[in-house]
Amino acid sequence: MGMILKAIWSQLVTLYRVLLHTFTPTDTVSYPEEMPYLAPRYRGRIVLTRDPGGEERCVACNLCAVACPVDCIALQKTEDEHGRWYADFFRINFSRCVMCGLCEEACPTYAIQLTPDFEMCEYDRQNMVYEKEHLLISGQGKYPGYSFYHVAGKAIKDKDKGESLNEATPIDVRSLLP
Amino acid sequence: MVELVIYLVIFGTLFGSFAGAALLVWFERRLLGLWQDRLGPNRVGLFGAGLAIADIIKLFAKEDWIPPFADRFVFVFAPTAIVMAMLLGFAVVPFAPDIHVADLNIGLLFFLGMTSLAVYSVLLGGLASNNKYALLGGLRSAAQMVSYEVFMGLSLMGVVMQAGTFSLVDIVLWQADNIWFFIPQFIGFLIFLIAGIAESHRLPFDLPEAEHELVAGFHTEYSGMKFGMFMLGEYLGVILISSMIATIFFGGWLGPDFLPPIFWFFLKSFAFICFFILLRAAIPRPRYDQLMSFGWKYLLPLTLINLLATGAILLWA
Image 1 (tube, each protein chain N blue to C red):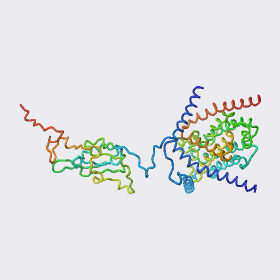
Image 2: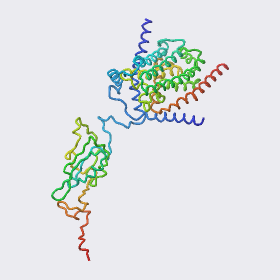
Image 3: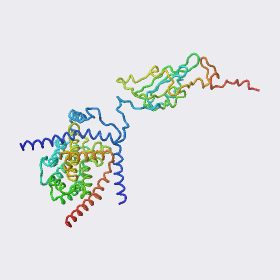
Image 4: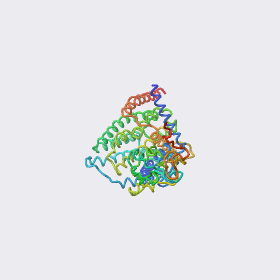
């Protein structure tokens, strides 16, 4: 008997709680006219960012392509004359991309980042394939001030080993010999 | 002149109930949206009310396909049966003192009979589809509606005993002289409400169509306007049960004088239609055996106790 009364009471409470939702504001918005708020770390369209010097951050290490569960990233490494690595081509097939953000997590240089933009509809599937020039933006994205080559201890153009802010001067190990 | 009024009432009831059922499709989705913190359909027309018309156009324009393995005649007949039965049920609803299609002296029994006929539609639709999901839906609906019909009828007998009549107009008039029936017959009201939900197979008792288990239940194979007829029948059933609750237990057209009687009737029916939708928004579907045991183990004894108590009190007084 007690169980029955408890069950009936539970149903009545359910009805009352749902009825109270008459007075709560809606969680949704009428989308095309009104944009919903998307958090800065929303996982949308993928971009490639640049470091503070305006150079490409991507060093073509392929970690994003390996991490990608649907294999939608394809890239090829190349080098400039000073030994700086960058991507020869960098291609993301957005018709496959599931916006999981694993590439962003895998990236050691903060180059690949996901943005709060999701409006990427195309009539032609071929247009969903983004090349490097479509992906590269001129800004630094979510991590301003970070430059991989200035903490990595690698010599590039206009900067030798140990010349940067967080780098120590390299030690000539032979000088330590007895 | 008198004939003209009768025709007006008949056609008013017919088209009013059709329009009500069509609008209810839209209104239900709006209310569900409100209670689920969504917006609901708001694009077509004023507040999205044009959705009713858009839905009807869509249903008419769809391919009206009869599966080659189906029993053709029964398959076509089944959807019409539920609409016919529900519309005939509207014949005895007294909207206002003189506005009713027929004041039968067995009005209550006629209403019960018509809602019982509706089960044939669901059952035959499931059977004729020749599809396992449809058959399971049909079986469930047969068992569910036949068992809930028992309490539905018995729960009204207390009202009949007190009012001493089966005529719905006389039942309302008795309530005008005495007291609205939901106070002396509160248990009867609750049981009629629950049985009414089961009878119109609305959520939480929509086991015949239970889309999570049975695809779409008895109307799995139906499309186009034949499916539309099932939907129409279901919404007509909601309106019919709501107006019956308003008539039998809440004094039908009775109410303060500042509004015309028919308005009070529609207001009360509307409140119960909203309650039906609230049930859909709030309460999950029980398991099939829970539904049946709830009916036979709790509702039936409760109804019988209510019936005995009412009879004893009436004999005492």
